[in-house]
Amino acid sequence: MTYKKLKRIDLIFHEDCECHKVLEKTFSKSNDEIINDLLESGLKGRGGAGFPTGLKWKFTAEQPSDERFVICNADEGEPGTFKDREILFKVPDKVFSGMAVCAKVIGAKKGYIYLRGEYRFLLPELRKALDKFHNDIKDLIDFEILIQMGSGAYICGEESALFESMEGKRGEPRNKPPYPTVAGFRNKPTVINNVETLVYAFMICMHGPMKFKELGTSDSRGSKVFSVSGDTPIPGIYELELGMALDQFVEEFGDGDTKAVQVGGAAGFCVPRKKLKETIIGFEGVPTGGSMKVFNSSRSMYNVLHNYLEFFEEESCGQCTPCRVGCQQLIKGIEAVKKGEKKAVYLEQLLKLSETMKLASKCGLGQSVANSFSSIVGNFREEMIY
Amino acid sequence: MPEVQELVKSLADKYGRKRENLLHILQGVVEQERYLSDVALTEVARELDMSAAQVYGTATFYTFLDTEPRGKYVVRICRTITCDMKGKNQIIQALEDSLKIKLGETTQNKKFTLLETNCMGWCHQGPAMLINDQAYTNLTVDKAIEIITDYVKNK
Ligand SMILES: Cc1cc2nc3c(=O)[nH]c(=O)nc-3n(C[C@H](O)[C@H](O)[C@H](O)COP(=O)(O)O)c2cc1C
Ligand code: SF4
Ligand code: FES
Image (cartoon, rainbow over all chains, first blue to last red; front, side, top):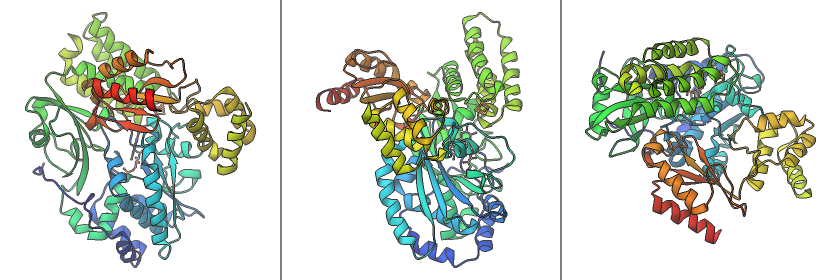
């Protein structure tokens, strides 16, 4: 594997952008050219799943339909993630512009930003910026962006749950397929992208694919915005080149006493100190939507896991049994082991249960509980028992 | 309560009476009333020509669409891991003492409700809390008390 050195990048927040000019230039290109640039850049989705953005746009554009939509996923509910808020706060025009380029490519007249309820305070400024943006692009494209608020449900960040919520229903994930590119919002072909993905797509239109492609590794092109929290002297939001080894990250952000890093939030993986060196941050190693939580040796990993499981249990939509009951049983199980009511080998049964949840759950929430569960139990077994 | 009826009607006029507009309307009611009373829920069902069960079922899915009475100011303290590590328990304790209520309760004068919530996107500045839409971060016990005292006195 190739490792990259930790390198700070300044693309997303750089204030050099005359969005209207870039849009004008981009709109003079054919849709195929724009899609080819995105494919060439290697940009993959920043919301977690990592699907190639160019392909997503291409599939949606090719789907026969009288109507198509572009949706910006600003539900940002993964514990430890806060970069989308900062992007929307600091460079909203770049987000809108990314949506406008997508709208042109797929032929959408309407776009939506699904903003989590916890970020309602952003609304006045966003609306102001949006009014100005609509006015600025009048001459370029017939496209309108609306903001839809969430109401405190992590699961609504899952794309099909988000569509349900936008349709005024309970945010319960749908069966897949069909995928959003075929049947998304109102069952029409829909591009749904993370806030950051849309900005990178626009940055690629601005600078060309090479500037992006020369960063990162062959599996993880470009840079990414990280949300750093926990036991670090410098918590905050950092744009870094992808493909660095985790020990480099810890050298920069750790407090000298780092015991483990949780990469990717509650749904992600816990990497202990002894594996930092061999762990690469990117799609070939441990992927992340940006959440990086640093734990030092004063922290109980049992408490960390317990906190995550409580989070999942509460946020599970309850639609399918493996996830609904599985989350409850995992909490009860680790509590019983900790209290000595169950022998340590019971942990093996719990690990099996989490594997079953991975296979049998309907959506990414239930499927990813095993990530933190097996990586924390596997690496910090003693802490679960004593 | 004709007031709620009027509110629901004006929200339905503003957003529309289709299923797709349901969340907008419920959010609008909560913004004004801080929670969805039975009267409000039935009124929304009537305006949108849906069953009350459907409206209730949708509302209860969402944490912020409370169906229990809430105070004018809903205080939500983050309980997720980073805020937990940075001492959210002390903050909760301080607010409980200062408002003389427990988590989940509402003050007698219906001004404050104290709740916990999941990660709200301020982990780098924890402990964090929301009072209605406003976020407060980097809380200490003193700071939390200062903020809440200001609400008690001035709002
Ligand atoms: C439980 C769950 C929560 C999710 N929350 C978010 C979220 O808050 N923001 C986001 O962009 N993607 C979230 N996703 C991923 C989305 O389903 C979807 O893959 C993403 O928005 C696609 O955008 P991208 O291709 O730009 O990454 C979540 C997925 C799951 C399973
Ligand atoms: S896995 Fe969990 S969150 Fe997903 S559909 Fe099933 S119950 Fe709902
Ligand atoms: S953990 Fe409290 S805001 Fe994220």
